[in-house]
Image (cartoon, rainbow, N blue to C red; front, side):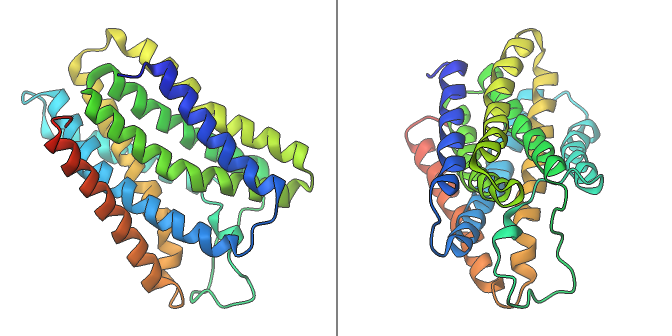
Length: 263
C-alpha cells in the first residue's frame, strides 16, 4: 500500500504536468478536449461519491450513528462548496475555453473576472481533495483509498489544465501563470499529509463524517462542472454521454476491484 507521502507526490506530479501543458504550447481544439475530459471526470466523481466515498463514510461511522448527522455531513460538504461559489470564490474555469463566437443556449454564463479569487477557490477545492484522500488512508481499506485517489486524479487533470490556461490568459505571462499552477498543485498533497497526520487520533465516527463531507463536495463539483454544457443545446447530448461514460468507467473499475478483493 502506498504511503500518504507517495500519494502526495503522485497528486503533485499529475497537477503540475497538466497545469504546465497549456503554458508550453497552444493545443488545437483544446476547448472541445477539455469539455470531454471534464464530462468524463464529472461522471467518475459522481460514481465515486455515490458508490465509494459516501457508502464508505456510512460504514466507517458505524450503525449506531444517527442518520440525520450522517446525511447532514454530506449536505454540509455540498453547501460548503455552494457558499464558496456564491461568495465569488468559484472553482469552475472550464467555461473560459468555450468558443464564445457561438451561442451557449442560455442567457448567462458565469465567467470569472477576478483571477485571484478563482485561484483561491480552486486551491480550496484542491485541499478538500486532499482531505478525502487523507481520511481514506486513515480509515478505509487500501482498495477504497486507491479508488478515491483515482477519482481525484481523473478530475484533477482537466482542472489543472484549466488553471494553467486560465491563468496564462489572465496574467499574460507563463511565469506568473506557473506560480498559480504551483499553488493549486501543492494544495492537495499538503492537505493529504496534514489530514493523515491529524486524523490519527480521530475516532471512527468522526472519520466517517469527514468522508461524508468530502462526498458532498464531490457531488457539488461534478454537477457544477457539467451543468453549463448540459444546458447548452449544442453540447448537451455530448456532455451527457461523457458523464455517463465516466460513471460507467468508474463502475467497471469498482466491480473489477471487488472481484480482486480490493473493495
